[in-house]
Length: 140
Image 1 (cartoon, rainbow, N blue to C red):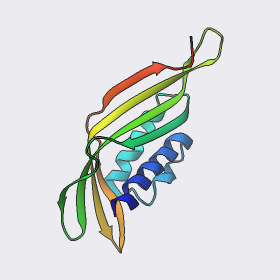
Image 2 (cartoon, rainbow, N blue to C red; image 1 turned 90 degrees about the vertical axis):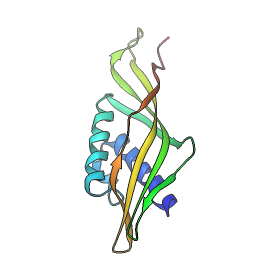
Image 3 (cartoon, rainbow, N blue to C red; image 1 turned 60 degrees about the vertical axis):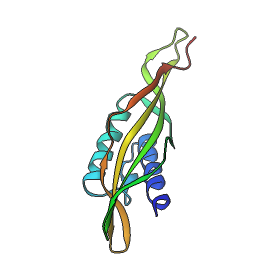
Image 4 (cartoon, rainbow, N blue to C red; image 1 turned 45 degrees about the vertical axis):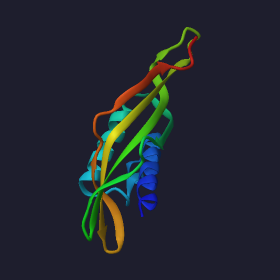
């Protein structure tokens, strides 16, 4: 079940980050989780003039069940995300600077809910990120 929800939901978040099309998070993100993920997309996009690459990988112990009922389940994960994009600064040669951020989120929580036979993420707690890298990658 989780492999059918969390990875596609994260991939939808990647698409929203790359394109700015917030509708990409539908239908896997719902309720409060949808609002939070869209807030996060806007915050991350504001770091860049243009986002050129976004990726994520599970880290640590993977996905662990915290609690469940007949219709909901809450999981915790550890994920590492990489964001790359142009910023509003120039290299000495005049080309736009490209910044790379690598952040770990060791305490993410996803609450999934079953409604009409379909699971969606209804609550999302990102937790405090750990900045692993923040650097310009294209200027000598």
